[in-house]
Image 1 (cartoon, rainbow, N blue to C red):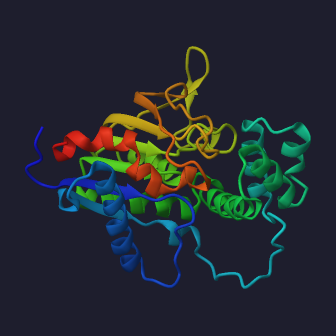
Image 2 (cartoon, rainbow, N blue to C red; image 1 turned 90 degrees about the vertical axis):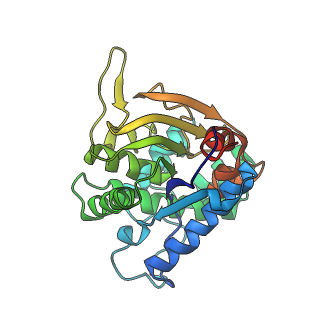
Amino acid sequence: MTATSPVRVVGVHGVGHYNRRQTPDEVRTAQAQDWTKHLAAGLTADPALIDLDFAYYAPLLHPGPVSQGGGDPEELADPLERELMAAWLAALDAPQAVSQGALTLPLRYAASWVAERLSLDGRLTKLFIRVFFREMAAYVRADDAVERLAAREEVARRIARHRPRIVIAHSLGSVVTYEALHAHPELRVELLVTAGSPLALPRAVFDRLSPRPENGPRHRLGTRPPGVERWVNIADPGDPVAIPPRLATFFQGVALDLTDTIHAGFGFHHAKNYLACAAMSALLGPYVGR
């Protein structure tokens, strides 16, 4: 297959992208260039073959003033953040004392267990947990939360405007995109790629999705959004956000569950490593004539 024109792509970011020093348009432009660069590097293709727009919803999860150090850095002060972390630790098979203790113990205990199990830097692990569960809680707090609806609509708006053949959604962005595409069945996407996705994370994400997963022959199942022709999931087997890593067990309509070791160190969840990984390149190659 030979690409006669640039393939249209919309990228949807995960946690940790909030940038209060730049305008949303500046962030979108910079991130679109960055994602294009990493995709092109993995494909060994001319970046001009990729026409990528970037859905930037992070400011919508941070509607209030930025805290100036009022919280305890050793705590997740929000009870929902703690609840989500406890569910995540249980999914990682943490000892009961660790997962249940996440509701009351300082963050460093959970971070220490995760860092030791996955051979990670404890400081980076603690920082990641704080950012991940703060933004996750802001999104899933309620089905009709203003932040949730606004983030979902921003993703839908970028897809409607850019009319991509491919949508690549990373981390929390896969949750926002899943809900946006269900809320807007008129949006047509040839290929949805979820990368490092927590969509199937029990209690924390899966059971809070909108629409809710429905009863199936063995257990409840989510469904491929109606406007998506093909859904492929990519997970690094060591990525603790992609828990469980295979989505097809929990969602009808997932065409492929691919695993790829995208980085040997802490980069197991970074978007840039998913964008340039072999599984992503093999998947997108036909769209750019590779």
